[in-house]
Length: 155
Image (cartoon, rainbow, N blue to C red; front, side, top):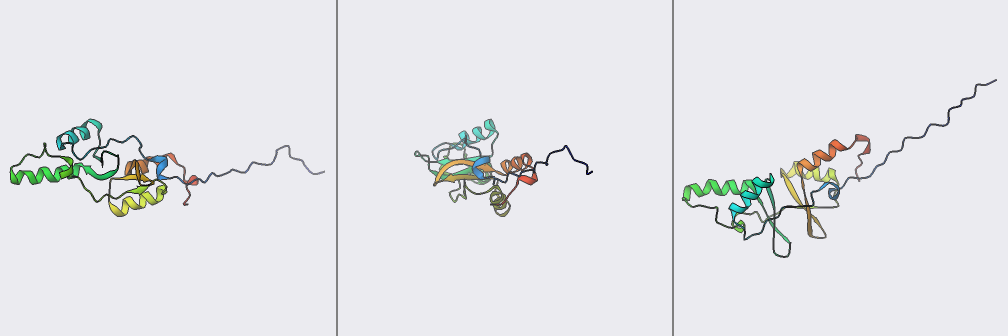
């Protein structure tokens, strides 16, 4: 007489393979700057909010540039040679206008690849050509820590 098992069939472990997108991990509440703000105001915001840069937008909220600590450092260094204070000058004089952005629908893997290729600290995130957030290298690292390797899938 064969031995019968009282154990039911084992449930198959189901993997959820949902691609993680930039929109899922980006920072949405941004500190933005305006071209007419002074560099002094910007540097105060950098310190107060513990950030190293941010998007520059016009009055309609359109992305027109990025200002960073590096932009400020470059101008501080150069102002020494000309003996000219820079703190009262506007962001428009210092911001980078050739802004590299990333679309919110890109995968985290694509974003990570862009970070390594472009050596940037952050990318403004666009959705339908509108600024909707920002993603940083730290956002990618935090997302990686929260995921288990079995849930990662390339789209």
